[in-house]
Amino acid sequence: MPRKIIKKLLPDESILRNHKHLSWLGSHLHDPSLWHLTRKSVARAFLVGVFCAFLPVPMQMIIAAVLALFARSNIPISVGLVWITNPLTITPIFYFTYVVGTYLLNTPTLDIELKFTYEALYHDLSAIWWPLLAGSLFCGVIFSVIAYFTASSFWIWHVRRSWSKRSKD
Image (cartoon, rainbow, N blue to C red):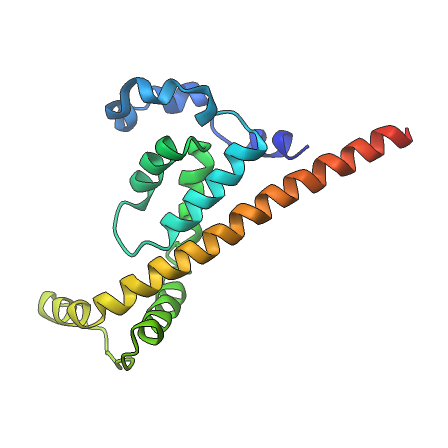
């Protein structure tokens, strides 16, 4: 079952419940559905985690943890999936979402040479912010819904396969 594989990869829930940076969430972290590995909680975690991965804001992991509370999804998976946008993938992903945003807003793409000075970053970000945000939200919704149904379908397929193996034995 996928539960066994996932459980090996996840940290212990008692460590996460008692983590000093998560203490502000209080008793909300004691809801068992936030830690159990069920088809619904894992599929919701994919929905939350993939959506938050596409948000072009800092502290995506905190946003994913809070959204996981409201969605009652598995918190470790929700937070872990945010790392889809990591230092290696963040540039192509956000460039793609920027291009999608310019298409959605019917605006031209700008050729911007990135310079790491405060004035240049402020000017460049103010020029691309709306297309980047629109494209990121659009892609976040689309890819998170795809991830939700993929995770749910994979779970069902895996359970059916294991049941059929049992019945043959």
